Length: 282
Image (cartoon, rainbow, N blue to C red; front, side):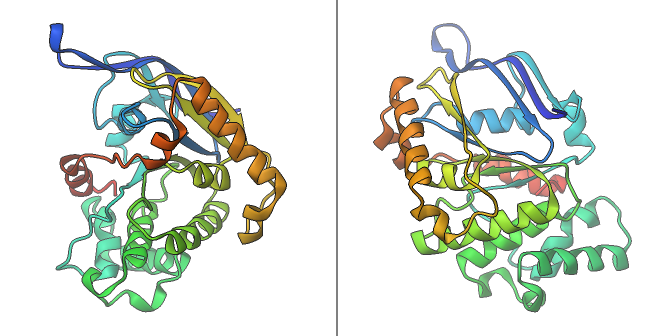
């Protein structure tokens, strides 16, 4: 398996001395080309911190983080990944199509090329007729689809998603899960997805990485053998419920309270989101 993401002995400590907090400890994880992998664990276990290490939003305290065979910082500078946050982080004064064009504009892509790419991405997320609207004219679910289109505009090898549907109502969330599956199959992009929802992780993923309470460690990786393509009927299959139970049991075995895991609402810090958008990675 060719690895897009490799973490070897990766740890993260915030602060120093007696005030130090060990957020992650000894993370070993490899994610292959075209995989969809979800990270799940109890509140404060470091899921979002792990995603931030992969995206080079923060440096690891120890260990190694590589993306596409190179240091994460180099991959970030090369704009080799896109990021989608819990909030869409769209610019209200730019139209939808110009929001999608933003990372291409920052990269110096000619106007005609970036307009064509933005149009293609909006078609992919089924918003082709909304390019001339402004973000405030769209629903929350539509805004998140714009954010996904923007993250995919540079054709990244890796898409990092930090609880992108956590603030949406359940029906919208389930519909966007289906749309995300369709987009993932269409693009073949490797996806690392942080979620606090066990059912969502099982529905979307090929593998679910279960993390322990802080300091976060990988306690188990659950293979999800549900057939593709996933549909609304997938959630009614006996195997789906078996896998939800398996992930929940793995959380408990790792010292996590499953109810707390399903209630968590951590996301990328706003300052991170603003910086990444400014750099054209989201």
